[in-house]
Length: 83
Image (cartoon, rainbow, N blue to C red; front, side, top):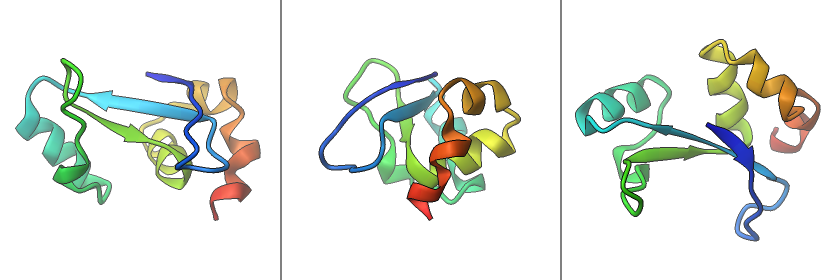
């Protein structure tokens, strides 16, 4: 799920993609595929998930074939901010 999001800790980022799974081991395996650390999993909400933004967000959405998210949130146009 991708949505607009602003957090002063992450300047230049105005969207986040949440990637979650109730099977935490499966989520960890998926994350390792993209170099995401298990300690980055957010357990604060009821559904364990990674919060993706910036370069990770763009690269992973592209690798997963989520071009619709990239277009809808104009992430391709914002990509230069993250390089």
